[in-house]
Length: 427
Image (tube, rainbow, N blue to C red; front, side, top):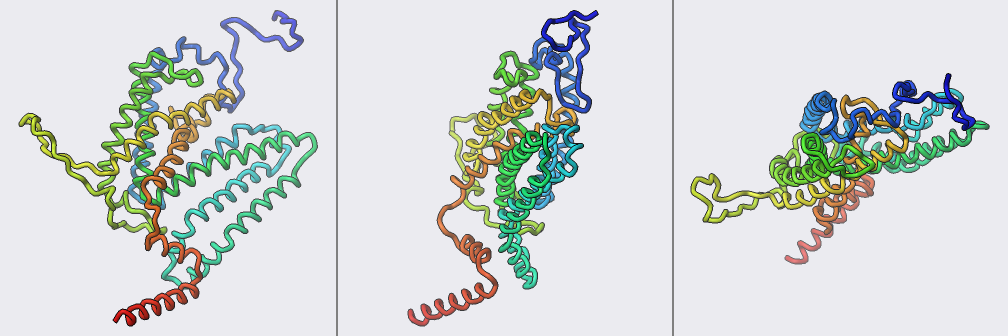
């Protein structure tokens, strides 16, 4: 017989043999489930080697697939970002989903995806419109068609959103208002989180794969180094909200990330495929002037070095100094994106956002720090790398983006006349 607690609620079993209940198909973790190993730190986890092998296996395949996509080029990297966005949105949509309420609201999930793809059309339409124009410049019919689409892009996205808004209002049901408006607000928060970081990520890709690959790689290096250092040496808890994080892992990962940033920038900066910006949506190989940031500078080493030392001078790319700043951010500030995600998961009492990656959780679990890093990389590139003065390329981009074909012909004729007048005037 179970003892009445006197609280007026249903009685619950107690003691060490009490059975923990877990909702079917949920990521929810009972509050005492992680006490089985005593201390939360990895060094005291009895299953840590099995977990490490699963995690290492998944990491190997992820890095291999990532390297292949990088080799294939800008468009394929963009496609990868889109797939990641869809998986992130799916995991986040499911976080507050209630099957009982959804059965009473047919089509409500479709409405969420309607808002998602409307946001995708708006964001990528604005980012890639000029590159799409540059791709079809040689075909007059396609050029005019694309010009029309770009001209009415914003109004198309607006009315698509308004259609979804009206759809939402018309599907409101009595006694479901709170759930529906909660889902509506949750959907818009997801759109902000997903598309804010992804828009900066795609912008970085087309500015040169280097500016996407270096920050993304540093986050991966930092994550792996933190895991390994914490795995073998972690003793001092770092932050309560993420109990398996340790100061040893954090400091060791910071040192490894900064050193890796300096070295990796030198390796990646020597390939034009990675450093050249992509001005259109083609897939051909790129050739460009790498610019002063990617031209090596040679430094003579001190004469007091012993004779057996193999180098008398070293070459350093100027971009390596910028890589140090990016590495510092990736090792010190970007991990707070992971801490935020840990607190978020604890608030919803879940272990992971999903289970699509064995040993890692869901896609969102792998992208928490990447979201913070992508925004910083874009802002740093625009603030300290891109030249702010006008250039011929910038003016040409504005002409192709804002003038019709007839207006461009008129500008060409007018400019030609001005040049002729100046030529004959000087002679």
